Length: 264
Image (tube, one colour):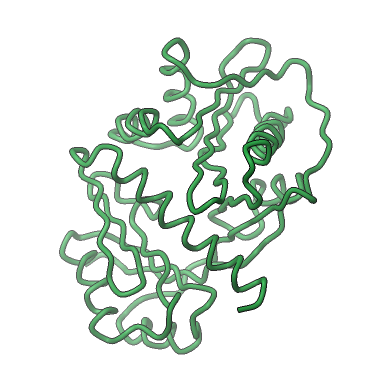
């Protein structure tokens, strides 16, 4: 196994284990994970958006069987969800894409997985108006509010976020601008990879360097804890979040080819 493949497998495994941590934080909210072959199939009928309803890792360990493909699609169809299938970069994506197309799926824009190693960490100067603090009982409500508003997430995601705050290994941060709550971020360590998640900034505070400060803060914190590889994902390959990450030393490790399962 060459270095790139080994890194890809670590990043793929990280994403699945990080989502397992989040989905397992409070099962009473209804998020579900089912393993089918080498894929982890996530569903949450209360929040029918791709972020929470996708299959990760399909094709990691070889060509999936027809039975596995049909089982994955049935899990979404049974619940009326517009599930999204993310093909592993290790898969034969041309073959797998044809098989999904035959089952009525439609190719969607790709997502990006970005990575960073300690040698790529950039020196950064942060606007002194920006402060970043760990989340505690005193600022917890601000963290939840800012995260929901930044990503325009509906209820009951607030309870999902609250549950994640109670997972001991997850580190949570609130960014303020001139003392006003403005941005959020998390580090989720899994498979010895530091995952950068929930990096959101409220619209009135964007373009002030807050997202860059949150990226740099988490990168330094994760590397100081001994992690040697960071993960981040963006819902487009070249959106503003991806560009901000790359300015901080991240690189695109691979693209996730995505296929959508129409409702009905």
